[in-house]
Length: 441
Image (cartoon, rainbow, N blue to C red; front, side, top):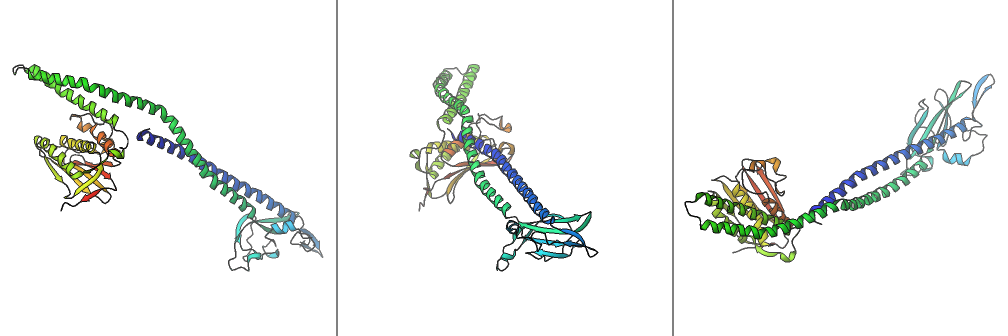
């Protein structure tokens, strides 16, 4: 599978994982919130039940002409009740307040703050007596309920009890552990599923692309021979045309020009079909980039003179050797130079530079030509793409695509910066730990 389809498959898997993973995380969050609310409601009901049991033991009786509250029969608070171990272990403290909010009796923990007359549930954090003698006394989360006690329509006081939230916390800790393990595992399964489904989805497209790829290579190869024959016959016919027959000469010249253009297109298509993916390391040769670029500059200087352009070079004085496929890299740089020549007006300047960086080398082709509109910069390396502003120039839009494919085959990258109307700068950056810079001196 080509890099293009691997990248597409990764994108499909990534988006599938992101979407399904988001649903999983939201679902896990809903479960967590639901369990928290459910456990809290169950705990509150249980705590409320305990407060009702204790409140049932409160007596409001007339004694010596006065109404008094008797707490002797109230579990924990009363003096006549047997110790209820389960209730005693589950209750952190119990308190009885008068209707005015005055503390009349308490068990285990004495309040440190005045009582605020209010009923209902409240979550608190306190230090229990069994931990108070420690230097680092842990604060325990408690759930407190304050119950107004009314008998015969008369408010006789407030019963306040609290119970540790330890059972709820233990349940939530276990749930958090399960979610912490289950959610990443679920995301992993989703990612693998996305990768598998992405492969299935891309397979028909990949098969079609492979067929088109083979057809392009076969058709391009088969077209080269008839095109060469047409070109040869047209050139041969042009040699025997008399000078006065201008119409025949013009038509033959048009045939030659068109055939050369089509031959160039066929060669480009054949190149794109044959050279795909990274190069075999066995094909790379240690090549002096300074010498290679100097040769290309000398060859292109003739075309620059014909277009009234100035070609400048800026190369290091040292020998810069890099593992490359010299013919392919020459083609990539040649495509950049050809574009610079094509889109630079007479009198313009083109500069070819080689810059040695700490971990790479950079080949730069800069011109002060027409430049590229900003909206086209993202698409200029696509096959057959041509900017609307450059439609008047000849070409098929394959030069930059070929240059990019060659650079990527060398595990490098090609970038461009351009200002419309001022010029462009293309940069090929090649990475090789075995790069050698040798001082000629």
